[in-house]
Amino acid sequence: MELVPWIATTMVYLAREASKLWRKICVETSLELHFLAEKWKYLLAGLIFQYIHGLAARGVHYLHQPGPILKDIGFMILPELGAERGYFSETLFSVIFLSFMLWTFHPFVYHSKRFYTVLLWPRVLACLIVCQMLRIITFYSTILPGPNYHCREGSPLASLPPPNSIFEVLFINFPRGVVYGCGDLIFSSHMIFTLVFVRTYHKYGSKRFVKMLAWVMVIAQSLLIIASRKHYTVDVVVAWYTVNFVVFLVDSKLPEMPDRSGGNQALLPLSAKEKESKAKEENHKLLNGNSVDATDWQRQRTQINGKHVDPHVQSESTINGVSR
Image (cartoon, rainbow, N blue to C red):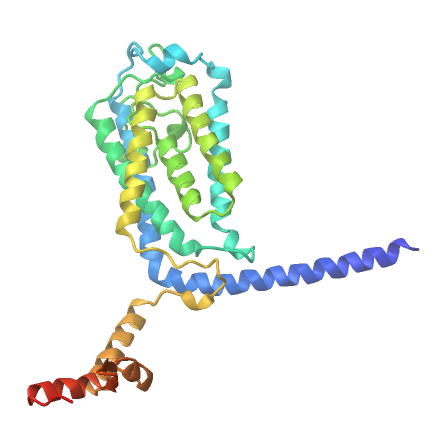
């Protein structure tokens, strides 16, 4: 009998907390939709380019020719994991990818937040697009023989026969065509996503321990990619300095997002129409001589010879040759 009141109290508490959570989600959704109406084109363009990047990677597989594995210092230092343990790097990458995805949507649930989800993702996609454009240029410039197990000589997946139709290319044989691709080496796509995500969390995240752990995971991801022979060492090294430079460049060019850490919802950026309306209002005030209120006018008074003199009166007196 004593268990019944406890269950009832617990149910009431859970219902109250669920109601609070639902209110948070509804409020955040209304705010995010405000930005989505203005930023949806950038988000759509970023998603479309992810398909273009996959299409380019599929295309280079038709050009790939298996051959002897190139001399690589990383292969000499790191022992080979083997085909049966190649999932180590994919597992770690999946953890990083999913963790970042969930973190970007935490403003819908948590009270403490520093950014708007809809404003964060265009920045992330911009970094990904620039890096992927550079990647497409490099792996089409020089097609190296793939070091991965399914890309080596003797493997039926190492090279693809000419496509029977354009649809065979456009559908990129997802997901098998993505997992078992060959030829798209310089530089590592896994490192692009990993570094962009970790750099983003390092800037906008709030947990110092998580930031340190994220960078440890990036280093571990780099070593696992080489040890599993998915990429040459050069693919990982080039990704490290290229992606970091691109993220720095994109951050310096894009306007900074409003900081929500103070909990002030009044920091909503103005839309294009609101900015235009505000500019017209300010111009109207200037034309009517109402741009300065009484307080600002009083602050503009200057002190001359121990007396407070209106600057406009002072200028007029100077012009007439009169000194007060």
